[in-house]
Image 1 (cartoon, rainbow, N blue to C red):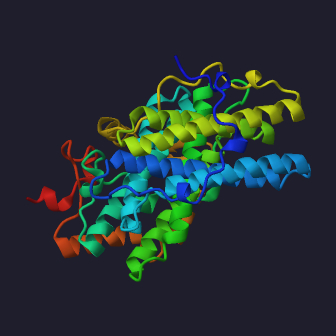
Image 2 (tube, rainbow, N blue to C red):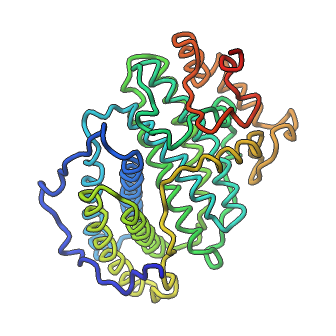
Length: 408
């Protein structure tokens, strides 16, 4: 049976304020941490950031002082939760190592969501962006070896393959072709809503991280790569956020945000092996349930809607799980590598007319070359080969097989 959060009291919001010492947890050991504990920390940090940003936007769209105060209290608690989750990242974990963690999140989270997504169009949207994030992991792994002599598999532990996806250079599209059709709020499967909200938050956090850390390097090739991929992440946020039905009210969206956080903390709790971090997921789950009750009271008070009208009787009983998705990613690579976007649809790039805006946009942004290609060339020149971790055999797409390996 899935969790019914309305049947649980959780921790009352007024009892959730914590001291400074509570907000400064002991970080995990980057040399010993399970890669999927790292990804869970990254995901839940992004989920908390999304909740905070949403609440701020909500507050800017109402002049009701009491409502603003209720939002401010819950938002302050969310901000404290975010400090706890983000504080689990150790100070000796470099921004590039964190970046590789972000891309492992993107690959294995997106693949898992796609595998469990019941709506065909949403499934396709997840598959489409999956191949692009998969390629980003490969580009950053090569940058890591090029600049730091680092081996990305020490971070991923071979749980996620590192090899080309849809090449980043061809991912740059005219903004009009990153807008998607949205689900219908009254008929959408509750699981689909949670999937979309989760991936929006995750991609937004990745976009924000790259926007703010792209200038941490002196080397122009690193700064260029972060700038290029940061813009793809902005495309992905546009891609995913447009799947949400804009007809939902601010109040209903507040309830849905709390539901998503509950579902995800419950999910993280099911698989976390680190007992100390597991206790954080458990405490935050109880806190989110308390925050949900506040949001439901506001929904009832301001819109006259009973929460049972929009909250499912139980949340999905299958937790969002970080696990290897190698076979799935390879199948999508083999079948969909040639897809591009044309308005709201996905079509083979060869079916686009030469006059399509995609080609004009490509010509502008890639004039003079792309950092995502330059970093591979530079690492190949330095190391004599690309950095790859193809644990399941040669690349499923012939044109993307390592030319150096092929000559051996």
